[in-house]
Image (cartoon, rainbow, N blue to C red; front, side):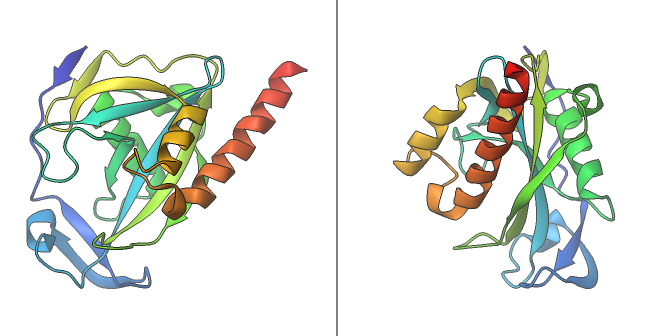
Length: 191
């Protein structure tokens, strides 16, 4: 896999929201938001699920990242300016792993996790279910160290044991909804 060379865009404008998820009417750059603890923002993440292998695509975060270096994570990031969540998913997938999500069908909205602890982002999760492995031939080296395909049940088990970036308790509703959708797809595929 070849890395995609792009710089971390600290001048990217982000829509500022309050602790209840309502827009404040302001846009700030990522740099301007960095030290403001009362400004919240939206992020999106994609679960790419391969039915044929019962695997989810994860990225190992770059060792150069300020937050959670080397951790397994999902493709995703900030929602820029006035883009929709679906537009943000498409641009993050293209930017980070050079994948056009339109080739894999419409993303399914899974749910949202509100900010907790030191986090200031509302996290919106989407799922793309496919019958084949998402082929990643290039990735953004500033964001990603490597690409991994992980068995979904193993990831859930590791999450329950505190071995993952997404803790089971904070993301339980997301995990359960994904499991329900995957089970429906599997039942359909067996017919």
